[in-house]
Length: 315
Image (cartoon, rainbow, N blue to C red; front, side, top):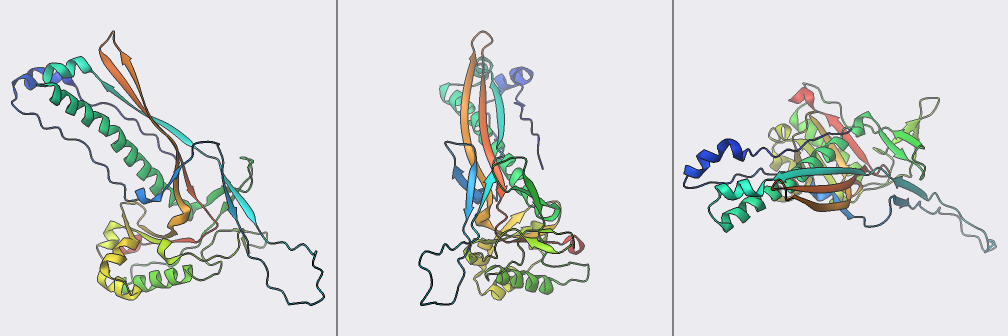
C-alpha cells in the first residue's frame, strides 16, 4: 500500500497584507500531529541498504549416547530475512522572507513566525508516518510479501489467520474472551497465528519455526469506536491488570476497516535512514525553499505472531 502526499504552503501573505497591517495581535495556529504508533520506531540506519534479520532455530533434543561421535555436525533451522524497500520522500516549504517582514512587528515576531512554519515540516512527517504504519496492518488480512533472500525478485506471500468471526450477535463479553484467549495463545510456543503459505493440497506450510511472544510486546490495536463500547475495567480484570496497565496495551486507531489487530510490537514498525533539512535561498526573488527529506523502511517481520478480527458487524 502506498501513499502520495503533497505538502504546500497555504499562507498567502499578499492576499491579507492590508488586513495584517491593521491588526493589533496575530495568533499563530499551527497544525498538530497525533501518531499513536510512534512507539514503533526502531532506530536509524546510517550505512548500508539491506536490513538482515537472522532468525535462530531451536536445537533438537536427542537421546544421550555414551558412544556418540564427538565430531558429528548438528544442524538447526536458522533462517535469514531481508528487508530492502526504502521509501524516500521530500516535504517542501517555501517561506517568503521579505513579505513576512512587512507584516510582523519585530525581530522576535519574525523568528517565531519562521519557527512555527518550520515546525509544520515535522507535523507533516508525523502524520505521513502514522498513515504508513497504519497501512501495514491490513496486509495481515490481504497477504504479506516478504523476501526470503537478498534477491529483491524472490518473494513469497504469507497469510495470517483471524482470531474470531464477529457477527451482529457477538457480545462485548464474547469479544473480550476471544481477545484474552488469543493473547494467552501468543505467549505459548506454537505456530498458531504465524504466517503460512498453502501447498498443492491446500495444507498450511509454516515458513518459520513455532514461536512465542513476550507478553510485554503484545499490543491490541483497536478502532476508537470499538474501545468506546468496551468496559476497559472489565477487560483489565480479565487480564488481571490495572486499568492504567490495560490501556498501555491498547492502541487506539482511527482505522477505516473496523478491525482489531493483535500484534507483536517488536516485529512491526519502521527504520529511518535519513531525516535531513536542506535550505535553498533565492536572493533574487526574496524567498527561501526548505526541503525536509525522510527515508524510511516500514515493515512487518513475519517470523512472529499476528492476527486480527473484523468487527464491522459490531459497529
